[in-house]
Amino acid sequence: APGLYVAATPIGNLGDVTKRLADTLAAADEVLCEDTRISGRLMQALGITAKLRPYHDHNGPQVRPGILAALKDGARIALISDAGTPLISDPGYKLVAEAREQGIQVYTVPGPCAAIAALSIAGVPTDRFSFLGFAPAKQGARQSLLREVMMREETLVFYETGPRLSKMLRDVTEVMGDRPVLIARELTKLHEEVVPGTAASLADIYESQPPKGEIVVVLPPAAAPQPTEEDIDRLMEEALKTLSLKDASEE
Ligand code: SAM
Image (tube, rainbow, N blue to C red; front, side, top):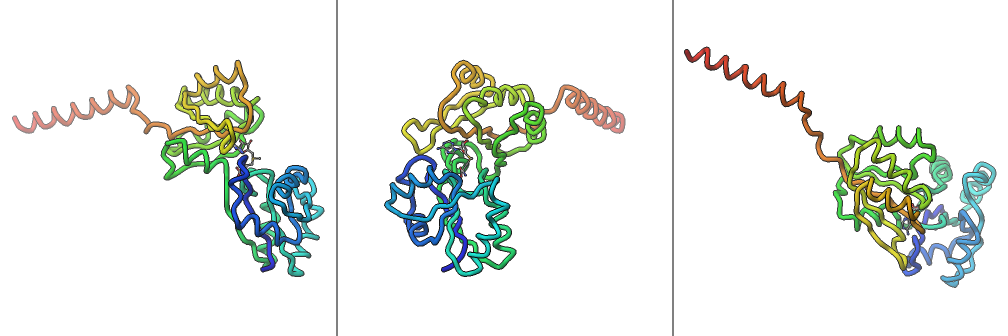
């Protein structure tokens, strides 16, 4: 059927290509991608000759009207990203929004997503989580984001790059204290690993040796807020007062 097919591609392991992804790419009149070289390699591996066209944040405003016109004319167009699920820390939301506004069918061809893959093997509560994408590159903005989310009683998930990882973990330590953290690295690839630790200990490790490859940072929920000493003193005083009132009334 004509429409826009938002299709997930592998995050490293070509074995994760779904049948629907292959069918969708083979049947598409055009495949929008971030980098034609990267997606060209995927097409080659799948033995598919597709018309690849770059679509990213820079050329989006110029090329969107033409893409939407083709979709209105009944084209089948696929949107993929370099890896994983489009729109998840990747371009495409304006295209999807405008397509839907114009009554064009938008279909999902779901598949790998690094954040979800990391959560599925981290062994932390996932009934609620916040996906925060890439934390800001500037320390001030990064720390204020961490301050904003630190009290959430749910798992926090970030994308991060190897060179920046230790700085990000230092900021976690500074803002939130030395909390448990898991690093999920190179998922679905040869050197896939999940490294548990704490923010400070992992910062030490990765500062001396920045990790290679692609990284998801998982912070399990903060423990429920503990009462402070003042809270406890106040509660004791209140308890004592009711006790002495009781004593007095019994006399
Ligand atoms: N749309 C993609 C998805 O669905 O996961 C994410 C795109 S974002 C530009 C790229 C980031 O995702 C990487 O910097 C890394 O943080 C994370 N990532 C992608 N592939 C990964 C993998 N195989 N292992 C760990 N993290 C990965």
